[in-house]
Length: 164
Image (tube, rainbow, N blue to C red):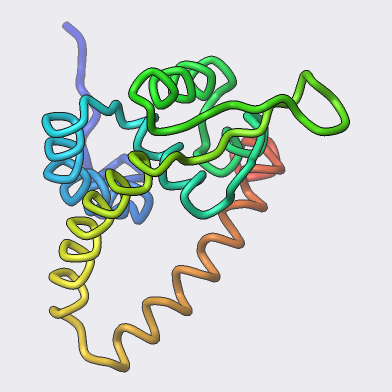
């Protein structure tokens, strides 16, 4: 008969693991936003992320967009294709190298972005309303430090992350 390990023996409890808790918050607030842009514009999650990036960084190339969105090259290419099909973005050949097309937001893409961003801002405001001004400042500072350290962990890979 097989014996099962007791939960107390585990070194990690998912329900209290910080990365999982951050993921849950992000997923729970992303779902209503995803429903809106999906139903309203037919956008995928990757399409929305790319639209947000090109709204901020005009004429970014696919590699830059992929890094900014944490998307693999295939997902980036599909997302850019979706945006061009919807008329939300245009691709232009790179100035020095035609292989690196620049992606720019169109007027209709900007309109869609602004509507989606307004809902995103409302969701963010609702979350932040639960915090005092000092808690917001502490959260911002803490997230900056966590983003920096998580980037170092990512760059180092699992062998440098403390796995035995």
